[in-house]
Amino acid sequence: MLTISQLAATAGVTVRTVRHYHHVGLLPEPERDASGYRRYSAQAVVDLIRIRTLADAGVPLARIDALLHAQPAEFAAAVTDIDAELQRKIDQLTEHRRRIAELASGEALVLPPEVVANLNRMRSLGVSERAVRIERDVWILMQALEPHSMPQGIRDKTASFDDPGTTRLYLAIGQSLDWDPHDPRVDRLIDDLDAWETEHERDSSRPRNMASQLVFSRIVEASPAWQRILDVLAHRARQRRTAGHDG
Image (cartoon, rainbow, N blue to C red; front, side, top):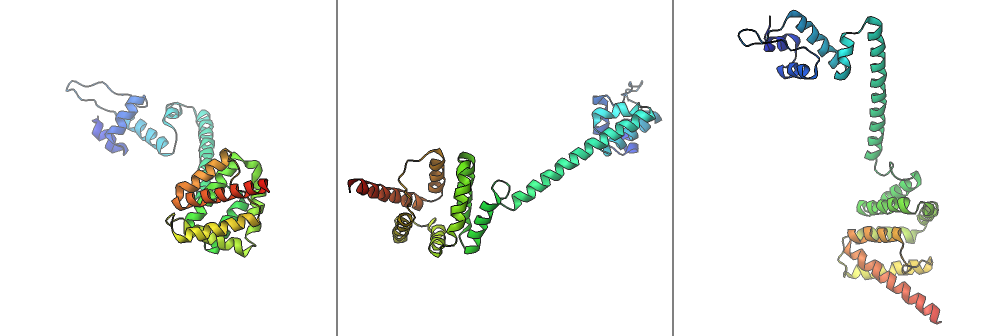
């Protein structure tokens, strides 16, 4: 007859594991003998080894008791079911690994391939990674709030890379994120951006819907310089519109 420590050592588990199996009803707990100790028989060793083997094979504890008392045909059928469940879990983990791999690649998990290609194009041009991340976040917001505008936005962005002047602006924008709002370079960038907006008939002063408000917030949160840039551009656009109405 064995003590609980001897039982655990013989079966290759811990005393804590034996007690847990008692608690969940997998292994009967013997009564104490006259000296106050619980004594385990050879059958307990056999049962514990079978429980440990099934548990190590991935069988859920809730199913082990039925397997211990199953007839051969029932045991085989139960093992088949358990194997199928394990395969489902493997497939799920495989899918999780695929998605994690996509996460590691950056934007591919949440954005269309065309947007990811444009972000990588910005990187290849030397645009700062910080600016690329802001651009990425802007696209994420647009996709969530204005998905209908995505196709045209993607086409416009892709076409813009064919314009050397626009690509120079991308580089300057990336550099300007860390500038002081009153750095003279900010004023020159404002002039360049204002000229670009005029040439491309863009209007920074038009009322902002929820999507554009969030885009604006994401940009100004990242850079005080860009809060000033956007404010000045909007002011100039309003002035042009007012002058156009007066004319």
